[in-house]
Structures are given as C-alpha cells and as structure tokens.
Length: 166
Image (tube, rainbow, N blue to C red; front, side):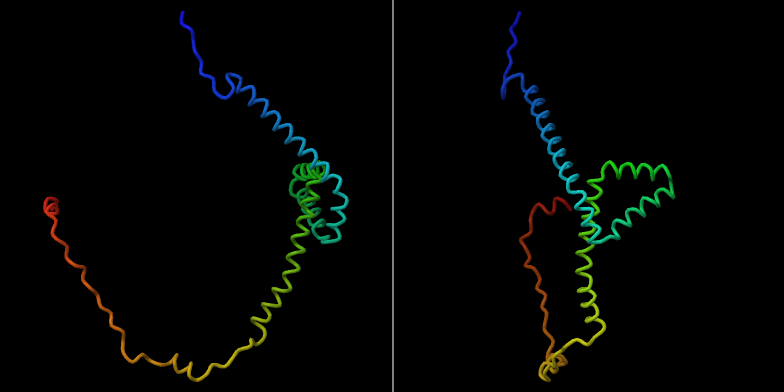
C-alpha cells in the first residue's frame, strides 16, 4: 500500500469551509444593511411624501393616473401594481421624491434656456463694426498662387530577392 501525499495550500483542505463561512457572513451583513436602509426609508416616507407634494404635486397625481390606467387596460396588472406599490411604498415614495427633485431642477434651468433662445432668435445681437482694412484683407485675391512641388522618392538599390517573387 502506498501512502498518498497532499500538498496543502492556504490553510489545507478546509478552505471550502472557510469560503462558505465567509460567504454566509457577507450575505448576513448585506441583508442587515438592506434591513437598515429599508427601515430608514420607511421612517422618512411621510416626510418625503409631504415634500414631494410640496415640490411638485403633479408627480404624485401622475403616479395615481398611471395605476388607474393599468386598471383600465388590465385589471390583474392594476391589482399587482397596487399591491407592489403598497409593499414597496418606501421605495416608491423615494423614487417619486427623486423624480420631483429632477423636475424641479429642470424647471429652474428651463426659463434660463428659454431666455437664451429668445435672445438668440427673437432680438438683435450686439455686434462690432469691422475696420475697412480687415474687409479688404478678406476680399483680396492672392498675388501669386502657391507652388506645390511633388518630389519623387529616391530609388532604392534593387533587391536581388525581388526577382525571385515575380
């Protein structure tokens, strides 16, 4: 009978046990982090709902209209959307708040953009007169045409192997 020899690396044959333990630990930490974030979103939900209503109430009304349209198109889809909205209400309210903030930012930039467009197309733009010297330079024809010379590349010594491939 021969004796089998093993080469142990990084802690021996129990590496898979350590890897599974580490995987379970990472999964546990991840679930605890998600639980904390869900709790935080649930606690902020009333504040975010009121803030969304104050910032842009049309976001909330559009969401309700979307759910109502789902009921009109397909009742089952509307019921599923309503149940998911209730279950994931902290995330829904957070998403609606984010949408209201983005629309608020767009509405702040939009009047400035409209003003810039109005100035660009609706009113005269300030300009400066160009001196006659510069106008003459633009209209002046060059006295002589530039010469373009094409040079032939120098001929290289013939390669004796080139004739073998002809």
